[in-house]
Length: 495
Image (tube, rainbow, N blue to C red; front, side):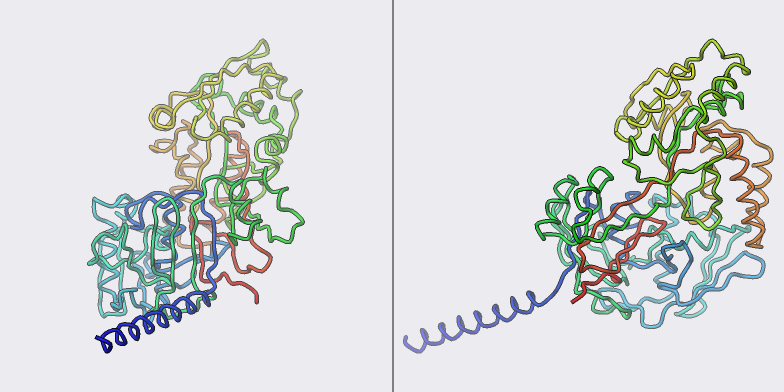
């Protein structure tokens, strides 16, 4: 009996020592803690359209190529690539040593299986990748994608986070993600937190011990957590920026790859007149609008193009604030006695409602009465965006890496042209762009389209919104990108 007691005490002591050792080791790890406003809706990149999901999955999985903060394409899972001389193929070489977090080697076959899954009808993006007509794997390190026609946006399509390579043999990637990225999911408490530990098979550099993501929808709560030392990085709105200024934090404010505008339905009799659209642009002080609604955090734009893309040209001063000129143009167009328009605003987006109210007040001062109609998002999508049953509306558009995907909304017969804008010149330039292999000429086409839209103003182009992140002074390496991704592996804490 005494021997049994001694044995039990010894085992208990070993257990205590082992537990203490594990705890000490865990305490030695220095996790970067970031607050995020929305919990991911799953961690399968092909089964979501949520930016909040991609910002997490971009650290668990890898795409064949990635982007830097300026939108330049860089190697990622693929160490190199080559576009065929005829523009009908792209050959990727898989990075040596690429391995999934379950220990399985990533070969060209896994890449092929992943893209076949992306192209399948269960994928939310299958239409976007219909241009891929063949996938060949001549050896385990090489994968060749072929196309039936030239698609100059093909290469950039491999950088979006939904094109991540997954282990297709794994079940339930939505809650059990398996990728070749720098991190693996170690735990996830829904609507509370996600813990990311380093993928032991990742053969690249990671500058931290791991990441913890805390779900905090309330941005004021995020600021409180930052000042209390509970988190290292937060995302805030402009109204909260003053609460952290000059307090030793790093404020990272940069334009996002997107834009916000007030669309005009060009099939409306009054709005079909260029002079009326010009008058509306002259009537609104865009800088004052940005100050009032976005606390000054936004870059004025004059065309449907975000400032972060390399083809951008500054056309923001095409129509300056000039109410008297607005009144004169309305008189020339036959609306000197007044004009009434309806503005549909999406209830779910308070900033767009607020912007619409400010714009309506500006238009009233030049003789345009605006009847504001606040609608549910589902109604906005079906009646405004798809049905095109509106006069004016305020909304935002996310950017793309390739300008064609951004400007396709202006093709006269296009399904996305909810502006009902028609321009044979823009149609011709977009058509020429899709088959032009010379990058300099493609840039010329895009910039000419920017100039046309800036002059003909099928919309009131407001701003490229600025994202505001705040980090502890000791945290370095956090940056933003022109697509919805984060690169946690580059973030570190100065010792």
